[in-house]
Length: 271
Image 1 (cartoon, rainbow, N blue to C red):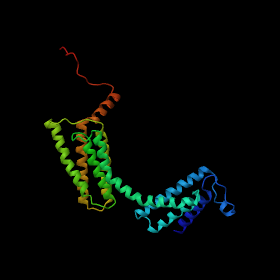
Image 2: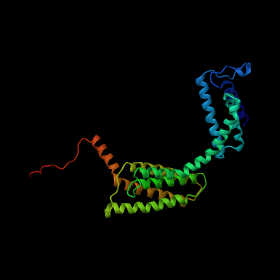
Image 3: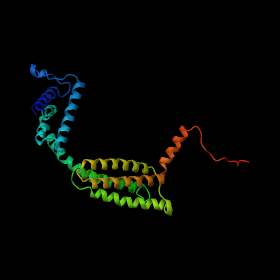
């Protein structure tokens, strides 16, 4: 703790005597030893200090570091105060900074909660929310992802995510039966199926990672992993059955790398 405190104080002193850029060095011989005259080095040191502040704040927020480390966030106020052109501006800047720090978590929560609605509006105006298009599947993946993020911070259990995947598995199975056996509906083939496929792969990776990070039992963990794999398999099969992207890619790869191809002759062979 002492070494960390000394390092922070020395770094704060160097930035305080060197900011704003291109300022005159201090008159004190002791403080002049901390002066950074090179603009490139000053920029790198400032970026390093900002990154250290973010790491300390994040570590304290996630309880990796004790809460008293928040006190180190007061050290950057010294170089910041020096960069203010007028002392009359300081109260307004301080009030703005405090309001930003207080409203930022609220804005993040509102953004996470409202993101499915924003995505739904974009898909609606893009005409992709048709039940036989990829839009509803993207919405389901996005809502499940938001719930997974909320679960990762300990706000809710993982039961809503499992319920969404289980319900979607039934819908995917029904879609495969209709597509290959009934042939009544006309499924829409668009570019958003590829986006939905990538989102589903990313979601399953994050879900499995969160399961291994959690403290649930082996049976529950195995069950949820099996549900995720079954869901991903059905979604890949449905997407490929509609779009044929993987088959098209394989055929193009085969044409580029094959030395011959088998074709049906146009003229019947005479025996």
